[in-house]
Length: 421
Ligand code: AMP
Ligand code: GLY
Image (tube, rainbow, N blue to C red; front, side, top):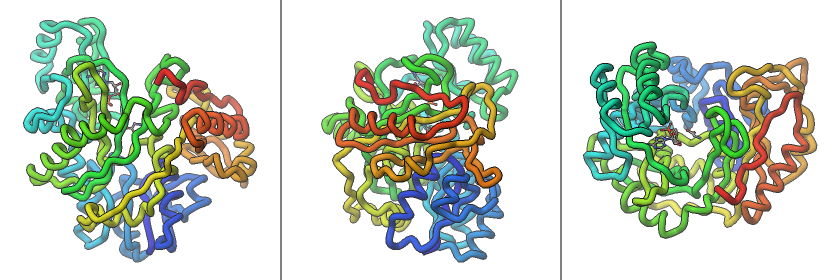
């Protein structure tokens, strides 16, 4: 089969890396990909949002199966565009990707179907939103309705902060149209866990659990980032909790979407928080998480391509999905200064040495090829995944990899996967 993967980050590298292991995968393309992905697939210079060009490429090249990694094209309807041309594609249609594209939609869905989540109100009128926050106790969480590069959630500890958040989102339009509507939520506390699942519209199969570290510095200090590291499995996500989530969250969500005429096909990501009142949904994403994928897919024993095909064909209930009984830790190597400002173009060393290790996998996120050398080309540069029998061993391997793979002004967290999480 000829396969096309759409996206350019560490997540897409992990997807390509895993698909390549399938005996059914003859040739893999990635649009637009990056310098590391180019070692595993043929990169094509088409942006993830250039939907017409992607469809044209798939038709001309005779692509048998396309996998969409990123959220923006899904929310914009890339799957519908492929299906219209009779092309097979893995990912939710626009009317189901809305679970990520609109927080107001997903909150309403959860309320209607009794799926546990934080209490909330939705506002499109600034004055009404303002009088609501002033009339409620803090902390409150103010969220832009639409996609905001993961930055549209503001936790407000004072009324002043809440009003400032509303100003930023609704008046200054920091996130553009995504801020036409806001969701204002009660503030919940508890450990967070990401559970990604395969869905075929009817059946939902959770993957192994993962946890990510979003803040830039050790001990969860500093600004929120796209993710500084992940580990799998989560220590808090027991079999009992999984059973409870299956009954109260996963199955009801997939059934709700089907019932609304929006069957979800693809990866449905449940961002969960274990509160004193049990597990609650913090957010849905309509795709694999980044960098969760970099610890989840290395633990998948089964053929990813076969699973994805079964999702598209509606036969996921017939699949036996197997996982390795091990653990994985991914430490992100970022450019010093990320997520604010940073330089690019530093030469990356140690990649050949790391490639010799079968317990370390290097996934590329922001890299480029310059004068025949791999150089840094983004905020998050690489994800170094270590594999071991348990988290502690995987952690050790990941940090050995971090020592081996180097570049100037490298920044990483030292506490990915340690016990307190
Ligand atoms: P989201 O983009 O919805 O995942 O939100 C980003 C992060 O904000 C989450 O991972 C949580 O850490 C935090 N967050 C979101 N909603 C709440 C809430 N209702 N209470 C506490 N923290 C929240
Ligand atoms: N790691 C969080 C996300 O992919 O949204």
